Amino acid sequence: MMATPDGHEIYWETRGNPAGKPAVVLHGGPGSGCAPWWADHFDLARYRVVMFDQRGCGRSRPYTLANNTTQHLIADIERLRERLGIERWLVLGGSWGAALGLAYAQAHPEHVSELVLFAVTAGTRREVEWITRDVGRLYPAEWARFRDGVPEHERDGSLVDAYHRLLTDPDPAVHDQAAREWCAWEDAHVGGEHDTRYDDPVFRLCFGRLVTHYWSHGCFLEDGQLLRDLDRLSDIPGVLVHGLRDLSSPPDIAWEIAQTWGELELMAGEGHGGRRMSERVAAAIDRFARR
Image (cartoon, rainbow, N blue to C red):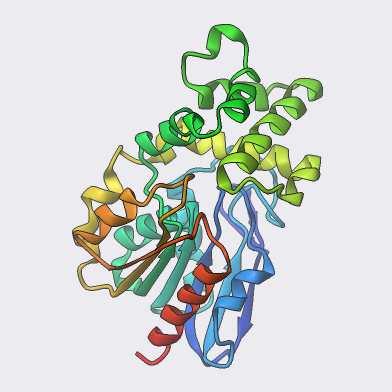
C-alpha cells in the first residue's frame, strides 16, 4: 500500500523481471480495478510490470470520491514511479485507462518511453453523451430501462448527473437500485454479455459512483483537452488498437488521435476488447521490449 498526503491508500504490485523494462498498467472504469489478466499482455521475462488499483476502487482504500480526480490519479502514478526508482516506463491503458494514459503522458512526457492504448477513449463530453443516450438507438429496450431508472423529470437532461445523484443517495435502497440499473446498461452496450463483477453489490456501487463522478465532471479535463494536446507526445512512440465494432467507444476517437500521433490498428469484428485485441496489444508491447 502507498499512502498519499490526502488520506488515500493505493494498492500496488509488481510482476515479472525486477531488472526488466519498466511498464505501468492503467485499468479502465474508472473503478474497474487492476485484475491479474492485465499482466498477460507482457513477456514477464523481459518486463517489470507495475499494476495498481486507482483511488477509491479495488484493493485501494477508502472507497471515497473525495480527493479523487484525474489530476490526483496522475500524481499517484508519479508518486509510484518515484517510489520504485523508475526513470521512464511504457504505459499500457485500456478504455478509461487509455484516456488516463494520454493525460499522464501529456503531463509527464519525459517519463514515458512508449504508449500502448486499446479501446481508446479521450474523456470528451460527446463520448459521454454517446454512451448514455445516443447509442440507445441501437439498444432501444435496454436504453429505455436505463432512462427510466431516474425520475421522470430528469430523463431529458443529463442521465449521468441524475444517476450520480441516485448513486450517492444515503438510502441503500436508492443507491443499490441505481447501481443495478447502471451496470445493466453497461452490460448492454459493452457487449451484451453479463459481467459477473456486477453481481457484487460493493463492486457495482463503487464502479457506478466512480464512473458517474468522473463523467459528470468532464473527467476533470477541459473538453477536448487530450485531443488538443497530442503534440506533447511527439517524441513518444505509440500504438492504438481499436475495434471497428466498439459501440461503447466508437473508432472515430482513435482515428482522430492517429491523424496527429501514433500507429493505429483498427480491427474488423472486434468490440470493446476481446482475445484478438489482447493478442495485438501483446504484440505491440513485445515489439517495444526490443527498444
